[in-house]
Image (cartoon, rainbow, N blue to C red):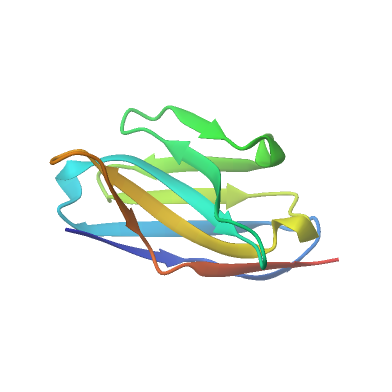
Length: 118
């Protein structure tokens, strides 16, 4: 079992920055990839960024060049630095961790609200 706790969401003006954090506890050694997803009102949850245990990252096209995902394996924490925020970035952001110990299993955090005002 893995537990994920997110922090760092809030209200920011367009063009501003926020940094999200997600701390993992429990069976941390079994975690492979970690990532961030977001869900805006009336829309499906969508991938924002993902990072492997080795530090390779991939991003949604909509956030490339503005968001940076990073990971501190010693602290079992993944971060999402969000710069040049736009109103369309407004969503609930969810942390995700994947384990493959017994086949793929996805763990999710409780979500943190990010609101960007114009």
